[in-house]
Image 1 (tube, rainbow, N blue to C red):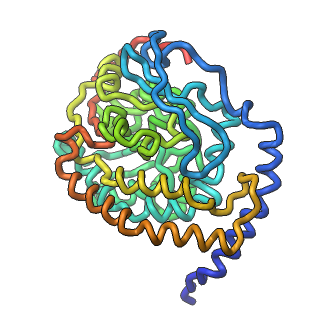
Image 2: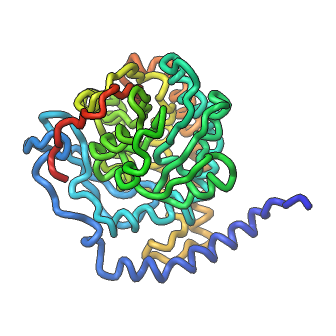
Image 3: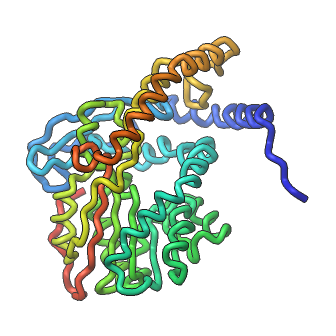
Length: 377
């Protein structure tokens, strides 16, 4: 029997019920404020250890509108940008809850599930450096495994495994998108994966890590000698970061803990015994900067949607109408922003407007290279 799609009205009722069911837990979590969600503010750079820091951004949660204020500091010595103070484990759990899973799962799964063309381009970037199809590939931060599903059309003989902290990786295995599913962190699981992979990929993963230097060391451990590491991250040196300020989507507070300039990442890879084969800025660019900035601004102005962490009562009919009317009135602005994003995209890399970059690096053949120890976490 063919399953029928749930009517929009029924979906709205179901979502409202799910929000209501979560509200008591969120109120309990917030009863004592948000201080416990933040660690101790540090006075040195977690990347290079220098003590010359300056504030780069003060902002709030512009996507979910969960309570809290977040600060990004920039190291004057190396340019590394990081959340300071950083979220504690309790803070990470609170702010990630209902973002990629729960209430946010359907929305984000729909977004990630429609980007097959982008995923195939990422996989093809490896073709000039792979003499033969990789036998085994580990995708770190795989989510629901949509990249692996698309990359298999480029490398049909490759076995794709996925690693993620969430249950999405287990769903990916059940749907056949990955061969093996590992749930947990790469540094913790790397000893059991040592030398097993021809390729390790990290697409928009390192910026979420509490310790990206440790993640890179773990990736090296999982690779066989001569294996390839494929990384894509937001570019904090993108001109849009300054032009758009807090409305630049890749700041994504509080989820993004570290933003790494390409030169820093290249140096760290060299310390670990990698040879960087490719640095790309144009192709990884996602042409959404102006549209996303306009949307975030409108979302901040408009009456909020219902959410279990908000102190206000669920929005009534007139608040919902006002929100819809505001976005409807702004449709020409949103369309213009989307058009400009598309027109700028072909030259974004050359103009310094690319919001992401990609590195491909080959691990050396030595089992001894460990790299220098970094600053204490």
